[in-house]
Amino acid sequence: EPEVTQTPSHQVTQMGQEVILRCVPISNHLYFYWYRQILGQKVEFLVSFYNNEISEKSEIFDDQFSVERPDGSNFTLKIRSTKLEDSAMYFCASSGETGSNEQFFGPGTRLTVL
Amino acid sequence: AQSVSQHNHHVILSEAASLELGCNYSYGGTVNLFWYVQYPGQHLQLLLKYFSGDPLVKGIKGFEAEFIKSKFSFNLRKPSVQWSDTAEYFCATYGGSQGNLIFGKGTKLSVKP
Image 1 (cartoon, chains in turn cyan, yellow):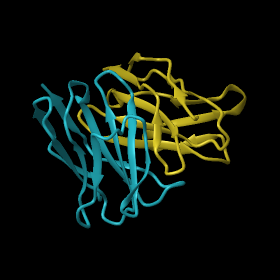
Image 2 (image 1 turned 135 degrees about the horizontal axis):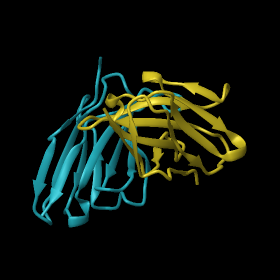
Image 3 (image 1 turned 90 degrees about the vertical axis):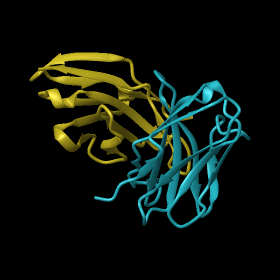
Image 4 (image 1 turned 180 degrees about the horizontal axis):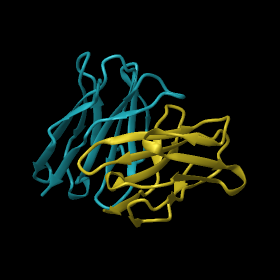
């Protein structure tokens, strides 16, 4: 069964450093999403991506965040200058289309900012 | 804006007990409601969804949920839980036009063997 994959599973970085979280969505999917979950809090939407551009983003997704689909398979989330409060679990998801289609989630990347 | 709330933070049950997890939604026009499950160490998986039609929705692994419009509720139920149902359960709804999901805080279910 096709699945969304994410690498790395755990990333530790120093405050102020840049990190890139990688996701490989399901191959025929068209919509891509990033969510995050700070420890003990709810899963929060960050950004959606369709047709090679951001289609929607939340207040959390400020200028330090960016997303890219550099090739036909990868979907990346870059955090330019990490802060302590960026420590969280980051989930990638993809769906065939919006509306009634299910979003499939990856296993997540745990980001720890020291 | 659409939102959902889950009031049970942690539920502890013995095997074979019946389960009901609460979810309330805010009215924002079209109703799209989901229940996701996250087993320990695994990714979020869709249990079931409601968009329209029969308000009693059946999902995977013996779960069901009932949409009650008058109560703004979409509670998740299972008549007899198993130890393998130990997981965190999230109610969700669409937050925008691009299908982004808005999640509740989640309910952790622990089933004692």
